[in-house]
Image (cartoon, rainbow, N blue to C red):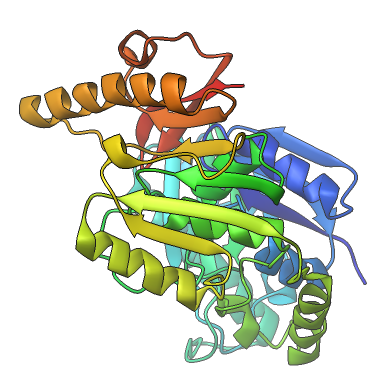
Amino acid sequence: MEKITLIATATMGLESIVARELKYLGYGKTTTSDGKVELEGTLQDICTLNLRLRCAERILIKIGEFEATTFDQLFDRTQELNWSKFIPRNGQFPISRVTSVKSTLFSKSDCQSIVKKAIVKNLQKSYNLDRLPENGPAYSIQLRILRDIVTISIDTSGEGLHKRGYRTDTNIAPIKETLAAALVLLSDWKGGEKPLLDPTCGSGTILIEAGMIAKNIAPGLKRTFISEKWPLLPGSLWTEEREKALKAQKLEAPCKIYGSDINDKTCRVARENVKNAGLEENVSIQKLPLTEISPPSTNGTIICNPPYGERIQEKQEAESLSIEMGRIFRNTFTNWSYFIITPDTNFEKLFGKKATRNRKLFNGGIKCYYYQYY
């Protein structure tokens, strides 16, 4: 198959985790920069990466990259790209995302309009059409301008890759699935007989992502992707990659995962999500306040995203929880390691212990810190 350049986009702070995932999947050479990891691949790799990457946000095809400081340059260079290689004569091609950082061209609406006109002109010439019908499959165009360097890509994912397909109630504010998977991969938990506990489990996202990692269940198996409708990617490619992903599963692999939360409705939603993910045999959830949790074994791993509020009362409650958490973890979970994500820069002082390691991550646009004790 002909080689193309693919981009796995990532939340700031997770780029190296995505690069590590790619290496694990057998992709040797990658280039990492802010918010993305680039690699050479094939059309079949579009299927593989969408189905199997846990921490990436989207998979894009890079169509071109060039410098532009004027609208004329933006139009001309966009028009020169080989759009008909990817977009058929009836394809829809909305300019769905435009970002401009530290660049001369900063008007997103103007850039959007110019790029659209340039692609239209290119495809009209390629297909010898006066008017493009745009009534076929969608090819969502993304435009990124950083320090006057323009990168134009086509999105192959559709909905973000954090949409796994197992979540039922979206009203409960969850941690993003891609971040939850990264928290597990950054921890010392590897499945097996060593238990994992999330004492503030919410809708169960960390628990589910951990179970899927332990059993090597591909995160994209329960959903569809925008590029499945492209003539460029025949259904046989998707079928082949789904079969490979299913074959790679280790459903019999042991894993002991426990979660608890103080809210009864939240626990019910978490159990439903666990069931949808097919992990009810391995994940146990109880309605319990933090003060009543006890270790299910002499050693294990705690990973959690405790509640944190911006209002003064919520902040005070969160700080009290951090103090209580430190007391309970140190006194009751003496041989356990713990990994806690929070935006609170004062967490170590409240918790009563300096972290072994601290990593900056972003949770829904909020700068957080992943305090790691091991």
